[in-house]
Length: 188
Image (cartoon, rainbow, N blue to C red):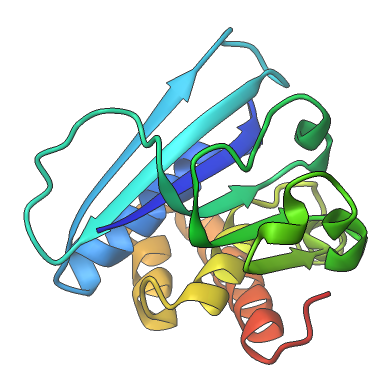
């Protein structure tokens, strides 16, 4: 089973992406999936968690994800508030929305042990392509580009099936951009 933890702030769309990844796996890749949020204070800007589980077999565990294969951080300021490495498996992957190169994060305690650490400036992509700082689908594309949890086609199909027509094409575009950046090794 692959377990993914999403770190965001209320209003970032972290749970939306957790759910989209689950839809992509279950509806378009023939896998079993779960996606669920964990909210603290329910207000815009407060730290929130989202979780996705993906497996080839039925998933019977309905608890919070404590040990994860992948951590996706939508807002790098959370690194000063939350231990995003807690429970990360030894061979796990971390994807951070940041303009800084991954080497800058490796200077932080614990980050030197992260096997696969990727940063991508999802904020810049969002502002340029979406006209708003909404990075959730960009970070989803980056994570899939670096992990192959699902196919890009499955992500696009999940977006088509879950988003309003006005949002689909732009979100598919930015998801694919991030996927290609990470897949091509161009992420920092």
